[in-house]
Length: 253
Image (tube, rainbow, N blue to C red):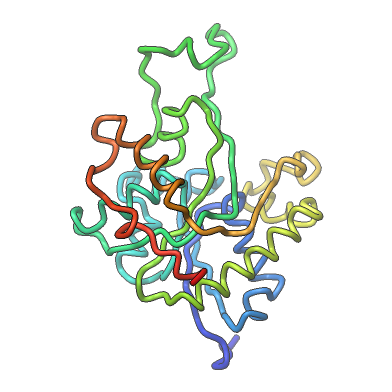
């Protein structure tokens, strides 16, 4: 289908339905179009997908394919766990990556868990003290494990090429999408069911667990708390990054 020349094209990456549901709903309900945007959603292999396969889980697990697309300019904006975005934006230049800035606190919140075998006699995280735990590095499971299963939220990153009014329009659409999801989460269960590729039926989903909120400015207080927590672990993030260089709330100016 031909793209309307009246709409501004923005390319965003998504990794899985539960974390990016507000983006998918905003696209399919026409909410981005209402804001004068045509948002092209580009899927990337995520380990939460049933068909992630070898590419995401083995061959390029350290390459972070979502960020690879951003580095090559194929997408303008992406979201991931708050700590992953923090590390990515703070260390981008020193690591030879395409620069990005934190532009919002994201819409999705998620809960992760450490899974043990039924006969392991491990009942609480504290029993794993001094025990190696396998997690994929520098993403949600890594940071959540360190924070002893605390709540995890998403944050949003974008290049300086994506202007404030465009970001504001995107976030308004995603805020409306979050309201639609919270009002009737079962209506949007098909996104998660499709991703599971037959391993999950709609009636098996506890859709009441889905909770989304409007994208919000990334405050100095939040930056300081998250960044200082990451600095408390050796080698987790590079020191010396200022709020003014890592964060740009231009969508709310």
